[in-house]
Image (tube, rainbow, N blue to C red; front, side, top):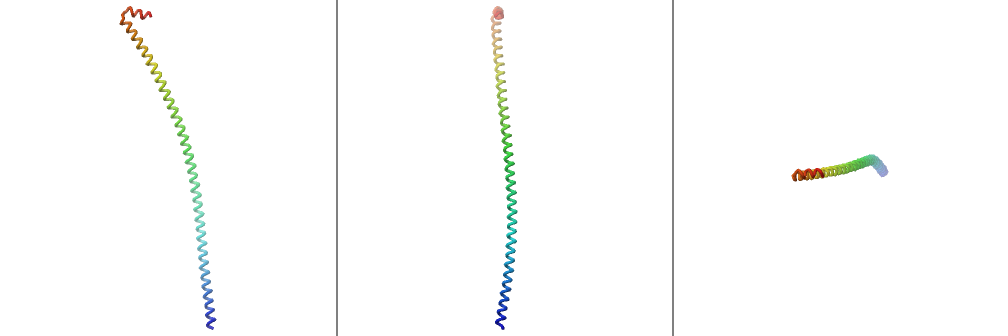
Length: 134
């Protein structure tokens, strides 16, 4: 009797141990599945954030590129205006210089005429009359 009771008790203990191990394995499987789902969800969220960040970065780059292009165009237009102004100022300066030179030449001629007239006057009335008759 006692040998068979011992076998039954061992079998019951083995079954209880098997049931306990099965429950622990089930718990570990569920915990691993939960962790895998959480990791997948986290990974999906990170991938979405990365895609959003890339899109925002590309939009910023495109805007920066457009802005740089606009600035380059504005700079070219300003440079052309400066070139036109410089040319215009140089032309005005040359024109003023030419007018001043013509006035100077006219003044020199007038001075020469005055010198001649004075010279004729100082030579006496007869020379002055002769000079007028020239």
